Length: 118
Length: 130
Image 1 (cartoon, each protein chain N blue to C red):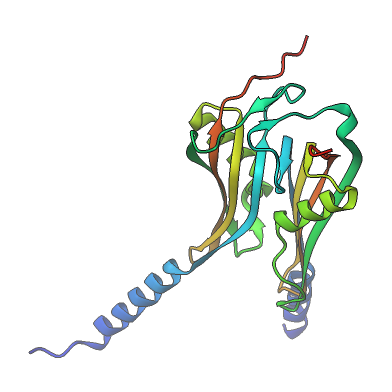
Image 2 (image 1 turned 45 degrees about the horizontal axis):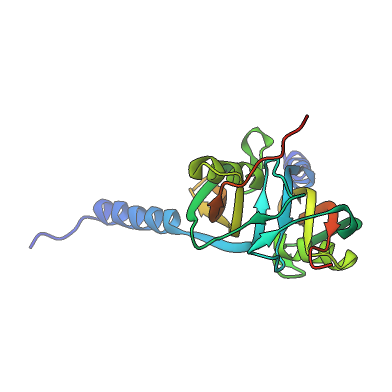
């Protein structure tokens, strides 16, 4: 009986869940853009970029602040020194091993960076 | 005054506990975006943007998570759906000064997770694809 209980506990403890969601945006920015007139041309292109912000949780203890879309977007724009992302893909993923042994919450962003002030 | 029976007291405690559990929830601001759109818009020509003239609209996408871990239909609240709902409500195709809020409300056997997008909705010329 005890053996079965231990086995059941191990199975539950090792069971996990991973899920993610993908959002597609034509335009995305968190930086200042020309709010009177906006125009994006090919010469403003900075190239493909990606950024992510993750939070790791071990035994219920978070090892960083909550993962945010803001931080991921900021990192992706900063890496190419752009201020706007076109054709952006935003991915929010969660992964947990039950009885929170380990968990991860991530925001990932990919897109083409442009600098509209160029 | 009649004394309260043990059974009534136990029911009262249970009701209080249930109410407290149902009131537990939290929300966090996960994004502040200056400009966001899910639609095809023409950015190759100058678009006049004026957030002051636009009305703010909200869109939301929610899902129930069993025991906080298992999402129903393996679906996480999607930002694109939230933005799309706000754009549809405002009858526009571009959102300015958008605020993304992720919230979590507990309901005994799990919780309801939501993502909400609120922003000024504008209607700018769409991109014409030949």
